[in-house]
Length: 270
Figure 1 (cartoon, helix red, strand yellow):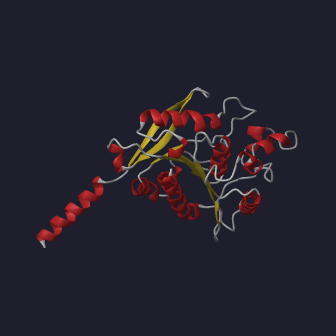
Figure 2 (cartoon, rainbow, N blue to C red):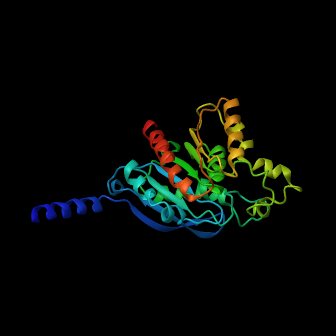
Figure 3 (tube, one colour):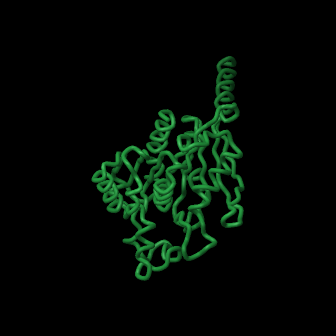
């Protein structure tokens, strides 16, 4: 019995040693002239000289950098399992990851697509090319991930979305979007230009591996189906997943597993 207890204690110790590290760091945005927090999850192998790929994981409306790690504990395990760094930035309460044409103090497109990757690459051992970067997120962050990846394919090599607001135009009074773009009635062209579904012309077949996921009971379900069909019409390969589920953490906690597996395969193939 004593030997068995000793073995179990040793086994538990070995498991605890090989664990991802979760840090909250302060990054700097030159465009917005302020410090912005981000959660950075590094796998155990990050202590070696090996350069690692990075997955940028965006939160939704009203969230912050701590959402994913506090509400989906398995995210930290995925960093170890797939040997990748996972970065969860604070994308502001309602930025929608735009550079706002209304408020010059909100430049979250510039921050997430340029400033943050540069900061991460400078402070961690990363594969600092598009082959080593992917981006995804939920809801507002699902929109943001596709919006940024479509526009910045030199930075991100693959992208995903979970319950993403991929067409914002059907929701002109929701989620503070009008505060960032101006009203839909006055500036419809801005809403057109900032809707993911209108940016598919930036893609060519196989230029950007994509995985899109949305529950059948989600209020964003129809716009995701429309995006899926438009990508099919344009011969843009992508994974599209839909199952019973609503706009909630139960759904996203399940969806992230498929997303991380997809990006792991992308990183290994690159």
